[in-house]
Length: 179
Image 1 (cartoon, one colour):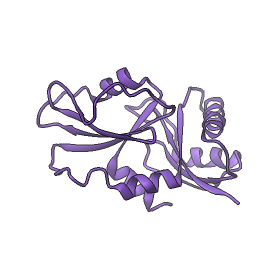
Image 2 (cartoon, rainbow, N blue to C red):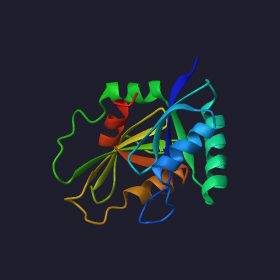
Image 3 (cartoon, rainbow, N blue to C red):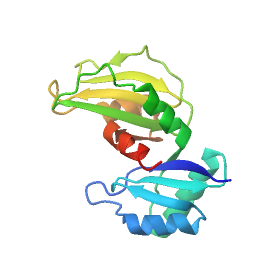
Image 4 (cartoon, rainbow, N blue to C red):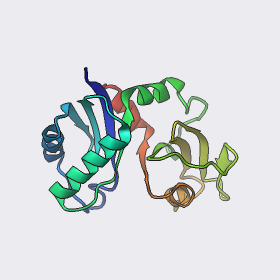
């Protein structure tokens, strides 16, 4: 019996670089014997069914195949559908008042990471806050009213490394509709 997974690709279709058409991506995923492949947005979100496997094996398989196909590295982070549904059910942003300047983010780590910070953690300029880390998933809030040049992604990469990819909370909510 197949299980549903979500692949989050890092660094594609950003600023005109590393272009990966979603229709081609869907075909390449099918070549890997994945079924019910659905892409969401151009940022590399893929819902698919596969024979149950370790997420690290899936990440490696997909990443290697896509690099051979498109000619550049495409880091891939996999989450099981149950993990995404669990995150959504916790509603980690329920106590955040959303305004035009507030951005809600979820960042996926590919590996376990040592936590060397007290949570919730707030940047020195108060523009960025990490609320929690749940199952290698960082839940954070960015306030653009405080700083127009926030360093949120730099903070994440400095603390957790480059094996990370970030999505807006609305994207995660849209993924739920595809599960």
